[in-house]
Image 1: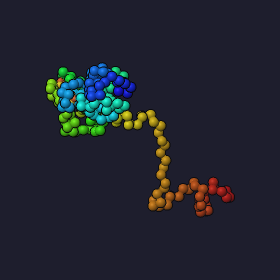
Image 2 (image 1 turned 90 degrees about the vertical axis):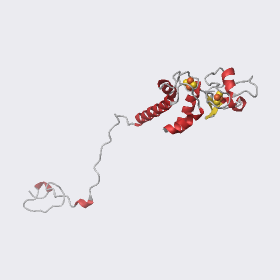
Image 3 (image 1 turned 30 degrees about the vertical axis):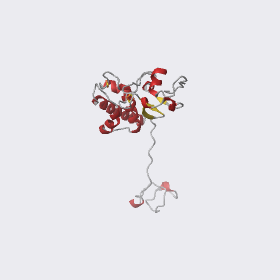
Image 4 (image 1 turned 180 degrees about the horizontal axis):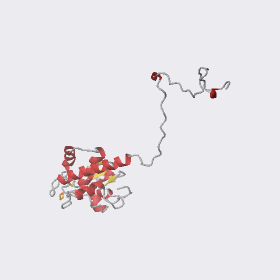
Length: 202
Ligand code: FES
Ligand code: FES
């Protein structure tokens, strides 16, 4: 459960995961809106898959990795999705928000830049009766933008990376003969104007 073992030994075999979360483990983040799989307020992840916990028998999740909205925060800091939902005005009464947050995390895990339509489709199982959905859509766009900027900043080369000296490339064989350098030690004609430094009588 959110990364730690939470054994449950006294549950009735038919209890839902939502009931066990709320009543036996004290995790009240997932909400009981309809108990019928219609509202999405009870959404949690079981082994990485988003489920309506009101429809899942708790016994079937024994040994599974269950993640609830309580597990989204890190070191007491709400996740970027949770912060964006709050900042965008998507949180009014708040009843739907834990489920919304779980759904948005699930969406962005598989699609790093969803279109508005894709976001709407992902949220179609989450009902909100207060705020409307515009704030949620805005929040998703903000998280996508912020994550992309953070990834870009991380990929930028460090400014003080040592410079690699540039070497001249090989000579171009099509450029013709190199002009004669009178001071060179290469083959040359002897004569009155011959370079005395090239050797021979002075
Ligand atoms: S309480 Fe589970 S979907 Fe509504
Ligand atoms: S904020 Fe109240 S139901 Fe969504």
